[in-house]
Every structure is written in C-alpha cells, then in structure tokens.
Length: 71
Image 1 (tube, one colour):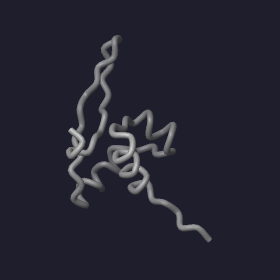
Image 2: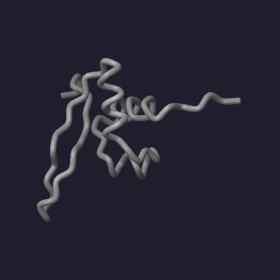
Image 3: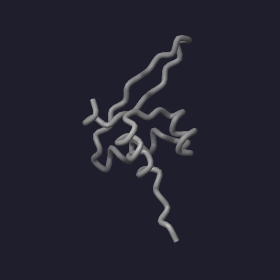
Image 4: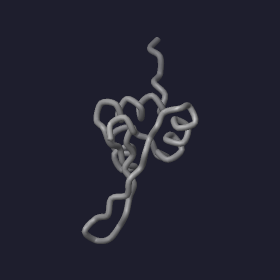
C-alpha cells in the first residue's frame, strides 16, 4: 500500500518546484481548501515562506505564497 502524501508535503513540493502558490491554485491543482492553515503549519515547522498581495484589474486582492529562498 502506497503512503499517502500529506497536504503540507504537497504545498512544500509545489513551492520548491513551481515557485509561487495561490489559494486558487491550491484548490484546483492540489485539492487543498485551506492554504493559509497549511502555510502556517509549514512556518511553525521552520520553513521561511513569505506572502505578497496581487491586485487584479478589478481591484480584488489575493495572496501568493513563496519560499523566501526563491525571492
């Protein structure tokens, strides 16, 4: 039986391989509904993760997370 990959491992893998992750990407691509909670857990585990706000042309803002080593 294969070991199930944790959501935290999926988020960390995405950040390492893809760079930046938004909540929308987490829901659609990874099936993770509460990305801020996963980011908080990774930060508590010692991973330096930053967040920047992106503003759309309609004025809506959303966050994009990135490992600080990648900045």
